[in-house]
Picture 1 (cartoon, protein in one colour):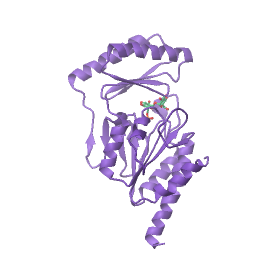
Picture 2 (spheres, helix red, strand yellow):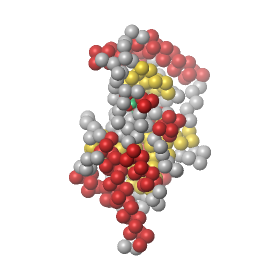
Picture 3 (cartoon, protein in one colour):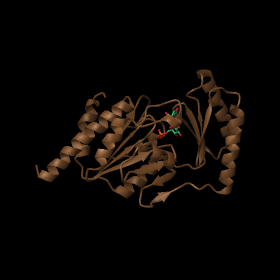
Picture 4 (cartoon, helix red, strand yellow):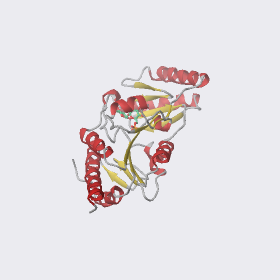
Length: 266
Ligand SMILES: O=P(O)(O)OC[C@H]1O[C@H](O[C@H]2O[C@H](CO)[C@@H](O)[C@H](O)[C@H]2O)[C@H](O)[C@@H](O)[C@@H]1O
């Protein structure tokens, strides 16, 4: 684990000292390092442990916010009790205690998705190393395992398909192009979590283009952290999911101290 950058290190104690804090995390590229097979992605153990221990401290709430469907995300993150989930980039919500919003496509949307998927499969049939991932309201073209030139061909093919299916939202990600028939965003998801928890401050950590919608809805008391390079609205930046482990471990130490002082009155 590497130490968290100086400015973020200075901001964490203020965040940790607020009464109610919401710790919200993206999954792929943030809690989990990227891997070739999306089904093999797993959170780093230090982050899993820190989140479990944070969740057990009064006033701390944990939320996972991902492009993955909630059913996949909630199995994969090894969550603490009481954790909340935003999946499919904001289109699915699980706040626990039956407070859920699932995607149920109507017949026209289901037919559109089936057409879109078939169109992609046809266009990509001759491109080696491409994998399609199905989601409740969309489909993802993965080219992490393709040669660079083939990745370029896959992106071109995806753009051609998009012209024929303009109702779908197309988003570029890390070695993926994603199509979705429901146009929610991680900003929408964060708004739902905020409304539910009513925290004094919120920390959101993410690495991808879709996480920018989350950073965009944060306020002056909140803390935003981008993982990796590229343009970002986030206030702070770390390099890797291993750095996120360090960040969560530091936050745990700080919040334990806040809790200890509130119990002993010192
Ligand atoms: O919002 P996230 O939790 O960051 O999810 C975004 C997409 O992540 C997954 O794809 C990414 O991770 C894969 C596994 O490491 C990697 O192979 C791929 O190249 C990455 O783009 C996931 O498969 C998608 O469904 C998510 O939308």
